[in-house]
Length: 132
Length: 132
DNA sequence: TGTATATTGTTATAATATAACGTTATGTAA
DNA sequence: TTACATAACGTTATATTATAACAATATACA
Image (cartoon, rainbow over the protein chains, first blue to last red):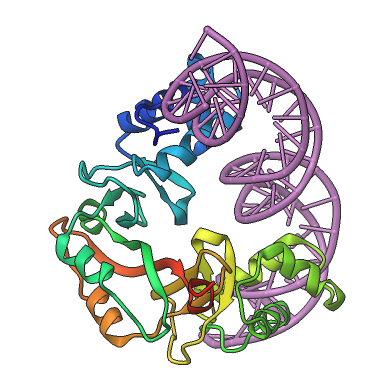
């Protein structure tokens, strides 16, 4: 069987919803909002999310247990992700900085470990919240 | 009231247990293991963990919902953390690399956001698992 | 001593995520 | 076109992770 070419029905529904939000969404909030489209159970959402994360269409913000659509059109596989998170308003932005990604992708320490993936989360105050 | 100088009873019990493990522990596994010391409820463990994370004695491995003792004696506050995680055996190691931490602490993008903290998780295969 | 804050103890419950089962759809090769 | 393997679906139940809310006790310090 070939690598999946198109998204399935549930995957499309979930991705569509997450892409329309400009912020990370929680799984159960997604569930609530796609119930009118026929998805009834958490597992249906989680399975779609798992797949979408796997193929890089969606990233999980680990520190928030939330899911956000990938903003890098070239982010084929989500093996190198970086986000900035405002600790006041919770705004999350995907960082697309080639220097940073190059630096981290090439990072090696003396542990003998071969890294194939990383996730970086920066925390602080966004412009708006800083000026309050 | 001054900044807390000593750890409280529950905080000591939890830290002690986490320090003795050489791997991240789950909150409920900690709970199970400190029950003989008198901690009966999840909240008692979570409250101790919260405090210990706040003061940098313990770090949370966000992608695993697990807690590990800080290995950097100089890690006064946990505002700059990096870990390597083996996706096969789940071994987690805290990365202590001054170049990396300097690079990330000084990182700026064009978002106007002021970063005060970051957490980085690398994934891959450790030496042992790579050679299997 | 009085007061504010931190910590504790406890019960209940919220929020996040997966197990297990059987069914249906889809891709590929005989 | 049939057979087979894999992916996706639907469903119920349950596991795992984390917090709300309330009352009591301990600690720091003016």
